[in-house]
Structure formats: structure tokens, C-alpha cells
Length: 474
Image (cartoon, rainbow, N blue to C red; front, side, top):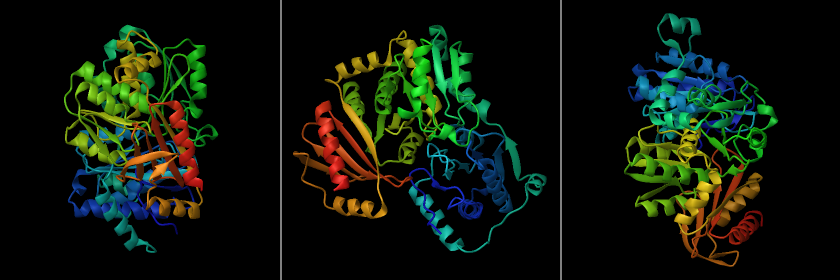
């Protein structure tokens, strides 16, 4: 049986291969024992799920195991976005949450994500303890489990709908009046995921004309991964242009990632969205604090931070590290290039729904110019454009092992560029003297190596990209 390990965002596996009911029971039992050891069992656990095949059945299994360990389960009535579940933990003061989701992964995957009592993803020191308990349970059937009916009769199962409380929180954060006064036309694509009834309804209540795409359950996600990437948002771009709309927005399978399309159908890279929203929050809110980004995220954020006198905190990949800083109230915004972000005073978890609404607010306050015009102005403020790219490289296990071995001794040059600094916070990041950089990193959730490249010049970016690919495959 494959080893059960928690990656950057929980444990994920192929349905009926390693993501099975037996393994879900085992992982849930281990989490239950962890909660008992920490004295958190009395606060209960929020249990949610996404729109994937069998997700609600897996969630019911989680609830039965929790109840069998005398831990109350607050089971979501419907598929629910990850940020909504995060907020519900905080609102209820629950001991944590277990969410059945594989986020943006392809349809054959499912996953289990454990969030701590602060609403953020469990930190590595917690997941390592859970993994150790899983190892002790391997090969056994020592699970504490009762039926759903018995759980309800004992007061250990409550079915909940956290949607409205979460939407009310967003209404407190987002300037919906500004959006309403703009009379914007927006297309929303939820990619068959949990985001339906969230961004679209919030914008409709603000008086926007809204067209919604893929707002029904399809466990195959239209035969594409529910990832709001440029490739997957071509239909959104078409409808934005055809309808003469101001903006297109999208959320991924569990609502924690965002995708943005400009009025002319141009896909806006998440790195650029983060920098634009950071500037917008500094100017519109007047907040003080730092900005956090992962090691793989654009240094455009650093340039904006320098322009506005804000300090930058670099973290490993995984929103749990940024979430911890949000819990400490240290940040204005924290973001990752993989389209994850949250802000001051909000949940310590990625929130793609919030990101979409903040983009609508930003465009509305700017009197509806195109996003690329706002980006052009931002580049002008920081001394010119910054070009950024990420490539996912599928590798066989032997090739991945060879790459890891090579990265133990980072090169002194890459593509005839001299390396001036090596950052090994997460992966291997090679820094060059002209502000360009390359990062090699193995994914924590998929069998791929990720290559990140950034430069002030698109020619230089493409050179480094080619050199990085040669390094990976040679």
C-alpha cells in the first residue's frame, strides 16, 4: 500500500487506488487521536467535502469515525468551499476541520485536508504526528466508528450550512457599494466546483450583470482538472469578450484558488493579480504590516513593497506558513503564485472567492479600466515590467531522483548566467545579478518537478526557461 503522507495541502491520492474508505477511516482515526491528545475533542470538528466522485460518502465516513471517538462532527449539508469551512472553524471555535477535497487536481484524485483550530492548514509538526499514528494503525481495523443515526441520537452529529455566515463575512470585507455603483458586467466560472452560489450571488446582490458558467456538479469536471489556469479558462475568456464584459473571474474545485480574465479575454497571471491586489489594499485600506509570499512567488511583490515602504516575508511553499502569519496579524496580504491568497483580518487559508470579489472592487474603484492598464501603471511605478513563468515537468521516479541528486550540488552557472546566491528555503532557487531567478522544486501533491523563472526581460526569461528545462531533463 502506498505511504500516506501529507503534502503542501493535505493527503491526496487516486480514488480506489490509495484513496479508499479504509484509508480514510485510518487517517480520520489518527486525526481523532491527535485531537484527543490535545484536549480539543469537546470543540468538535467541521466536516466538509467538494464535488468529486464519492466525496460526500467519504465525508460521512469521517463523521462516523469522529463520532465513534466521542468527537462532535459538524457535517456540511452541501459541497462547501474550503475558505467557507475555514471561516466556520473560527466562527464556531471548533477544534478543526476535515475536508474531503483534492482541490484543483484531476478528477481521478480525491484528498483529505486537516485544518487546525485557528482555521488554517495544519502545520508540518502536526501532520507528522498524524502520519506517525497512521503508521501504527497500518494493517489493523482498530477504528472507533458508529452509525450516522447513532451519532445524531447521541448529539455527536449536527448537519450545518455555513454558507450565509461566510458570505456575511465577505460583505464586511469587500466594498460591495463600489462594485454596485459601477454596474459591472462579469462572467463567473466555477469549473463544476464548490464555488457556485458564492461569487456569482455576491456580485448579483451588488447589482452586477452576471453570467455563470459550469455551475452544476460534474465529477469529471468537463474532462479537465478544475484548475483556473489559462488553458482551462478559454471558454470564460470567450464569454467575457462576446458579452462585452468588464471582467471574468473563476474559482477552482474547492474555491480556494482564483483565475482572472481581463475585458479583452487576456488571462492575468496570478502573480500579477497578487501584486495588483497588494497595491490596492495598501492604497484603499491604509493598512500597516508586512506582505508575505512563498519562495516561488513573484518578486514584483517585493518591488511594490519597496515602493510603499512595506517589509516582505518569504515563506516555503504551502499556504500554512502564510496562514500562521495571518493568525499573528502581521500581514496586509499573503499570497502564492499558485493563485492562493488571503488578507489581514480574514481566514489563515487561501480564499479564491475573496480574491475574485476584491478584483471586482479594484476594477470598479478604478472606474472600469482594463486590468492590463492597471498592470501597466504598476510596472511603470516599479521601474518596468517583470516577466514570470512556471512550467510543470512530468518525471518518472528515476528521473526525479536524478534531479534531486543534482540539486544537492547547485550549479554555479545556468544558461551562461552566473549564480550570485542560492536559496534552499524550499527547493533550490538560483539568484542572478540582474534580478532574475530560477527555482527548481518537486511538487508536494503531484508527481512533477516545477520550474519557476522570473526576469526583467522576456528574452532573458525565455533563455533561463530553456536552460532550466535542459537542467531538469539532462
